[in-house]
Image (tube, rainbow over all chains, first blue to last red; front, side):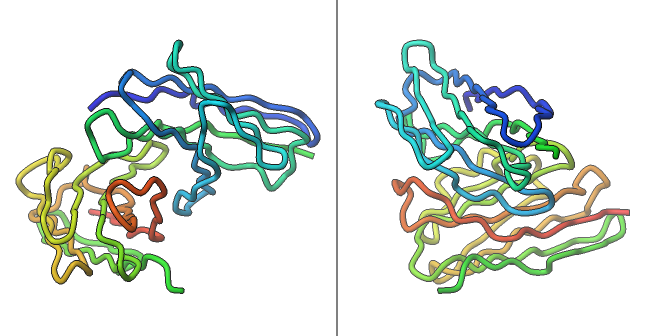
Length: 110
Length: 114
């Protein structure tokens, strides 16, 4: 199964900061992309899908660059409650099995 | 409505024992996935069910691992002759169908093999 690569971090940022994560995927046939959030000792939950045109949900912006095969997540005005691990996911390319990255850890401090 | 449930939430066993982990997906969800997550690691795909059949078992790490699903509902993951390296959180997820994008995860079973 093809890989999804992420910088594990941790990214340690103060409240109010803007932080960005990137993720690369190796299967060029992947069709769907997502960001999941996983809190410590909890299950992953869908944060947002990633569309080719880019999409925004409040303080969160996701972008997809198919040519370079990377996905990004931008978080503006970071909150303490944003502290979590962010998992990048790619799906498609002949498989129904989503491929999860190892996650990027974000720590937002006062 | 009810989400995905898993039982037990925690399981401590001795090396060499068999364990059975249960997943109850969201009602009506035909796709069901099992993952393993070791401490500080990412999600490792184990097996996928579409209905009661398992078209992809490629992630099962050894023949000590098996899974079944009955009635397009509950699934059980069985680990025989457990080893210490089997210690991990076992996560189950379901989706309305295999082509549906979002996966809904259960809280996981934390397995510790002594």
